[in-house]
Length: 322
Image 1 (cartoon, rainbow, N blue to C red):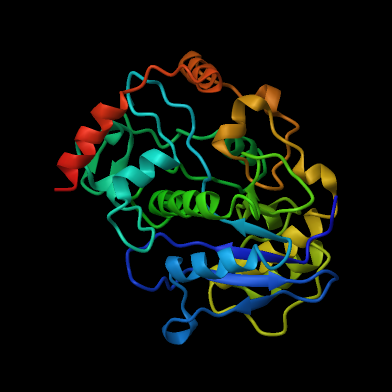
Image 2: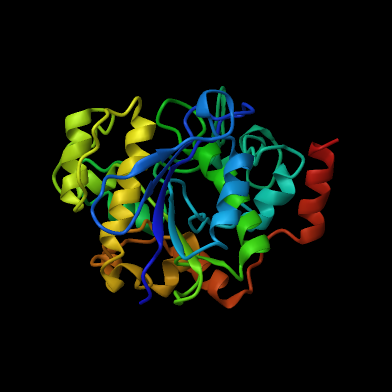
């Protein structure tokens, strides 16, 4: 496999502000020098999702880079009895397209969309919401002690990842539509030696996979994790967990990418859901699916899904966006 020119770790943010305080970007170059933070064009070096999208689309065309983003790339299989819509990047785009800066909060705010019953929003949890509705990769990651992935259908509480993932899917669709000749999104697409590669990451998983502390806001813990991934330590302590996450992600991508097996594709059943880079495939055959989930996966693979029609979904969106 052709080498990458450099590695980009991104700690994403789904907040609705113009500039995202929690969106951090770090870069590592081949070798073992410590990764460095890249500051955005906003006040105090902040990034917006729009600003990052511009930066990223420019960089994937200038060289072959590996980018790690910490949000869910896809949806788990959902029983069509409780969600009649086909959840996808297009569905998210059609619902949220009027919101600027790739914001995804609308996904959780509408009360009568085809998916509304499966999300948890403040004061109004969906009747079919479950905190245990995970993708296969999240169930695989949870086998590592201390790794506690959250369902992307939750938008409430400090640990929620829902708005971040939905905004991230909007960005992925934008990247795919505009840069598919320069960047591929793994594992939805197979690897090649020409394009840049974008992967999903779970920063806490990296130190936990080495039996280390995941508290990456701590200078000593961050450096211990960096050294576990063959990187020299950083001299300055991170100012936040977000900075630590981005720094370690860049270094971990550099280290893991040395093994071509890291880019092997997961089981065909789970590929459309996305897969967290670095999470082992060893126990895929042990992942338990309900009968309904298995059926939905098979329908997805055969492209014969009995979901709500495009006209039905379009009518809902028109009503919600008036």
